[in-house]
Length: 248
Image (cartoon, rainbow, N blue to C red):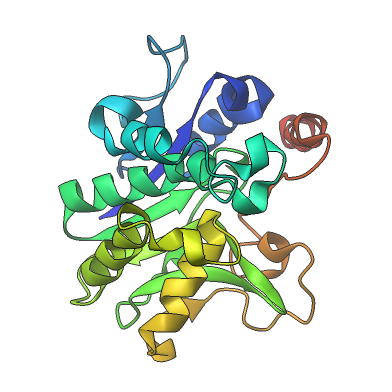
């Protein structure tokens, strides 16, 4: 089981996630489920296969609203009113709550997270699967030398005896309020905090271990030949340019 999930709202959908979802559906491992956690009032019109399942994010993860209500006035959680992503835990828990929810529902197999502004531009084949899904590892991630990890792509081996414990510890970091004491509160920082705290580096698979620079971590990692990630300023334009190349 190689289940993949993502989450999005109207803004991300309009900025390129609509097109990305088609690439994901077309190129992800055949016959495996795709879960889209969404914030829509109604599911948007699309032409995706039946394996794409739409999950109401707020109904399935009511803890998101509770978390936001509790911390909305704290600058270390609301990103100083949204101006500093490094301290915007409220924004990024939309991602982490989706991961925690799906892991509890699925329980076994591999659970893969992919940011909705990343896209799968090559067909996933057996070579890809054998390279990145290591049954002896607990979690695979994209590291960056001298910087927090790129958590736009994560793999959780739910059959490993420690993985659910890791996810529970990650969730508790937020629900307990302990996250507020960290230097940064976005998901990549909190993920790295728990990973380092875990104290067993041999259980984690860095897909970008050979990188010499923190730039373009997706491109230099083991998934770079299959998945790309448009980030930063003019993200919508970057995605559109990449998508046009694939359609040529």
